[in-house]
Length: 285
Image 1: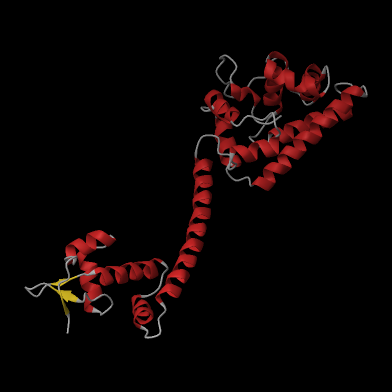
Image 2 (image 1 turned 180 degrees about the vertical axis):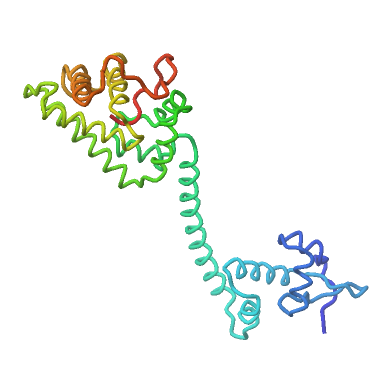
């Protein structure tokens, strides 16, 4: 025999709104015996009491965990069910689910970051860890502001979005090694135009080609900025005094040896000539 309406009983509409499901869902659960309210109004309408609402919440938890409705009903109606033990298991399972979802959110955030200007799938903290303490993540935004309309920037976005943290670490390590080799070559008197200097220039062009297809003419254009813009000069001079001009000279000599006139070399779609921005220090040198 079903109970009479308790003082705090809820109609199906109010119960549905309370737990966040539709009235149709509650009617369905009632029809299959999963969630049949135990009380009625004096007019004969079913209403949900406190115990019914508690059972509704347990149904929702199990449904969120992916259990079929039939299995949920068997669990809740088992005569030896330990409600507290079930709640503890539910809490553990929900906590694990939350952790999985949080990891998914991080993964989705990285995918979104890859679709944003810049395309780098690294957090700001990871960028500093990989590129060094003097790295500034805002340089990527500055570079996008300056080069965003160029096809080379589009190439950078597409390539950067594919690189994993491990691959970025390899790029950073290769950059560091090249810089050390450049400084050593200058200290030991390697002359621009020599085979050793040309090989270093080609290594630098290959490294630039990580980000976009860098031609000899484009490399010459970049090297001009090394000697004209303080951001570049400061970084190279910190490695070895005189390195800025020497690097520009070996790039130009290597280009000339391969038939490119350094005096007339031009960028395919020359970036706008505007005041230097933070992007002048990106990509990592």
